Length: 76
Image (cartoon, rainbow, N blue to C red; front, side, top):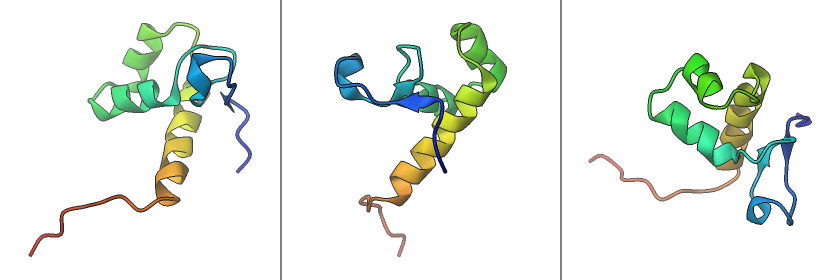
């Protein structure tokens, strides 16, 4: 997938992936969603953000996690 709403700029926000044209890190959007916020609540918190930006941030995060092994507890 080609990401059109996510950018990485070493001169902006320390080079972390952000929503294009905004200083909103992908991690912030994903964290808000993980804490139980609905899309409309996130959009209310960030009026310049669009629904497509939230969805692309979630997709970006999913692909980023798929590319790495994370230590998980294994249930016996």
